[in-house]
Length: 342
Figure 1 (cartoon, one colour):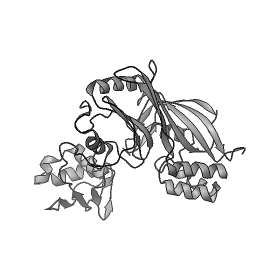
Figure 2: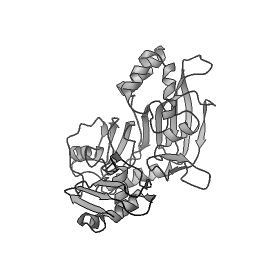
Figure 3: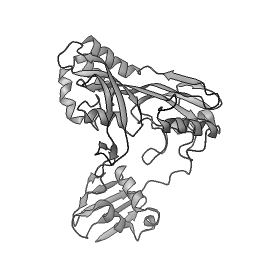
Figure 4: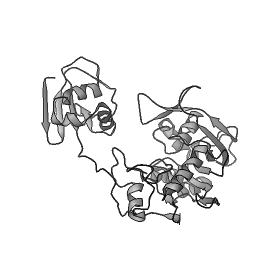
């Protein structure tokens, strides 16, 4: 290392080691002798890189495995330590149902479920702590109290959260069973490009996080990854009588609940979701086939067109079968209306 400087929360270094060294390895060596290095493991460095806290030259680099050339300038901003536990925050919640055991909410798009690197506050957990006080199950740990299942940040819709440990254990068991022997139901409304064939079916394809891009999930061969099963049914095509529809409204029911499952499964079939920049960026050109109102509505939506419309489960205390539904939020409904008018 030619030079290393530490100023406040920023570290700058010039890499003088071997060419084509991994970015995370170079950073680890750069900070090894600094006070900040004592608190940053290799895995924590990788998290900081993925969260956009590191740079090579003047460019932010989010791939820990990116190769660093000899003489490259490395930069790292070390964020202040996160609090040991999330703090209550007065974030409004759309509560569908609540009792002493659980709370069912309609999560808006853009709300992260629990604190994580890059999202230390402003999450659903922070909102729940303010709304429920100390009455959340502790089974999920200090960062995920009461959290039984999750929705992606930019997926809206119905969620259940446990307020007691008994409720958490019961709901977690139902989600682990995937509704195979119990009443658990999960349904989503998805707008995808094209028209899946057959019009109803099952996508059974294991999923695994990609090694070179940890933000993405991919379908992998049998024997690898985790089992993932999505049942789907096409409900509408747009235009409705076109030989080759531009867009379809699809109802998806989950038999498993993997990260990005619906998004990856439909993209794997060649029908990524509208607005999904992670799995459907190559389909942006298809927007020219939408009418003006639909193009404007899709732009205003600003996210993948996916909404959790239905959640059913057995109440942990009474065994009563409960079903909750949520209509698409206005931005997604406006997109639907525009597609129907076209």
